[in-house]
Image 1 (cartoon, rainbow, N blue to C red):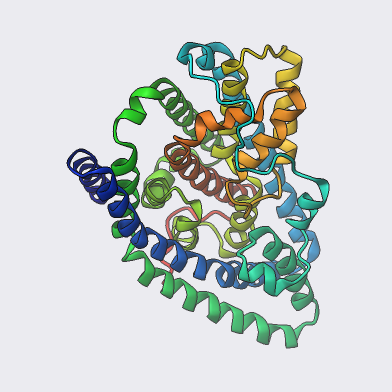
Image 2: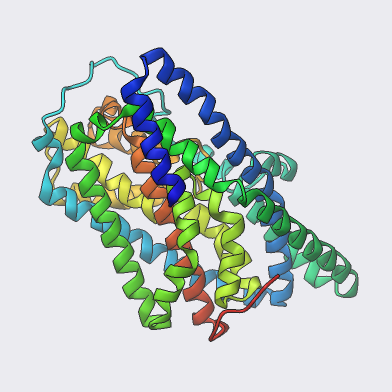
Length: 403
């Protein structure tokens, strides 16, 4: 938190005291620190997901257990997705922020720089890997999960010989978690750099121009947090407050770096310390990073309706609901696609004759919005892991120290 505040102050000082060339140079230099941190995090993710998931599935013991936990996980994911999308639809339909802001229309021939469609082939590509080595190299979490599920089940099925592999991968996961601890010492510096860079370039003017949209989105995000925590309290009671305190640093890290991946390695440890069994955390969390992007879901309805309102495209209630369902389906399985939320929105807008150039209205503030999306994704997946653990009757009553 101190680093984030320092980043804001440093960024504003550079914004007001430097020339445009100096601001650009400052941003380029300080972004190196953020890039290094995110590269170190991405270095960890693939081996951590693979090793922990294989060990977790192998320790579940049988395919029935995998299917049971997987079914409960997907039920929660779909419910949380519908909640997020519905909240965005309700808020934007009532506020009509696109009309109130009276933003200038972008040129008719302007390009968004994003893919306009998401084909069925692309969707399948991001689910089933054609090469596990390519998936590992590109940090395609969902593809790694698919291979790890097969590998884990096969490892468990061969008995004693499989235990050798399980023991080795268990040791690998512990080593990677130790590496994670070393990398996390650099997190405050990366957070300061990320905040300072965006503030130096954009300055407070960005907040003045898009203030209503940003404020409404952030208030809706807080509302979504509250709803998710209230629903979780039906499963774990007052411990939901303890959960929030346990993962607060990971939420702040995701917020400041605008990357939920940055929080992933340490989040596994924090959830296990909270009392979730490792076998469930290592199964639910990687799936959540592909299927349970609650913050991104909320943003998709916000952005789609905002653009429609900006162009005065009138949508019926039926069209809005169908848009909600389209967003829910097309957003699954594209984790790992750069700016995935914007790609999904671009593909959805064309279905309702809404100009895709409208995305240009939001690209300038996407970094600020992405910070809230990333933090929400971390919270949502943490709650999912805890709820599934409780649903399975395996949530510890008090935190467990895992070294």
